[in-house]
Image (cartoon, rainbow over all chains, first blue to last red; front, side):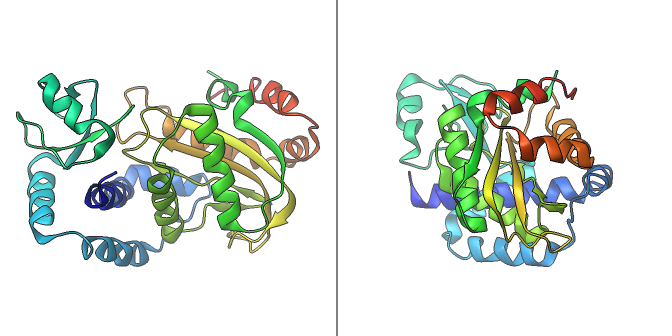
Length: 116
Length: 152
């Protein structure tokens, strides 16, 4: 798998966690289950460490897509982008498979992550 | 739906030999790999470790429920494991853990089962009689039969 795509997925998962637990209702439910979610600063530090390993060009793309859509990376399954649900040309879909390159959806521009 | 619908018999392992937190996490991910064909385990492990930085998923009384959402997951994937010996896990009560559930979910899932599943597990293990059952079951089949009795 492409190394920068790995880092982007890791960043995506951290950002998703932060967003989810920033929702008061979700945070309340999770705490009620008995989980502690108090060390946000440590998670933010990890986030910065991951971002520091990604090229500025990709970070700008990621941040722009996050700001626009709320999610910069979306799954592609078969040849369908799960951000905008447009079917990719088969030639692109085969390039995205196995995540060896960083590719974006030709329609919505989101970064694509191939999922089985 | 029941807990058994999410944690299948082949996602249950008893008497793990892992002796530390990292070893247990690797075993739990191995369960998900075998049971759900989960790929890119290192990415899921990154996510779980990030979640642990936010706060230990060791909720006390010998139970831990590492969990989170990841782009790598294409559906909810859950498993259960019991270690032979308790493992240090930085749990909220500082006690070691030998009962482990793992739950990972996609970023978006239309069924909305992820939080209810976590809640059901947390509620079930809060009761000492349920933890005792999980400690004493001899086979994954027995555990799964119990999980089939727990409504999500």
